[in-house]
Length: 89
Image (cartoon, rainbow, N blue to C red):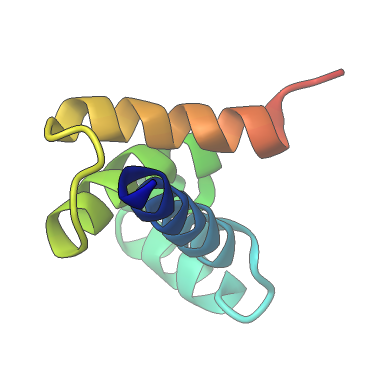
């Protein structure tokens, strides 16, 4: 039961940070400025699938890795974002 609670906390953190960074209106000017300086980094900050992979790695280091493997955490984070927001019906 404790693992499930940790995983849900981790998943909400990944979902929240990804959505706020890549989609929010308030961070739109920052994304545009970063895009001017570094197109690659600008794409990373605008792509939910890309950002969720790297965001998952960072969150796994800061909180606690649900799987114990950072690469797996990144893949699960990207899958979570794809499944909840990006897939087409």
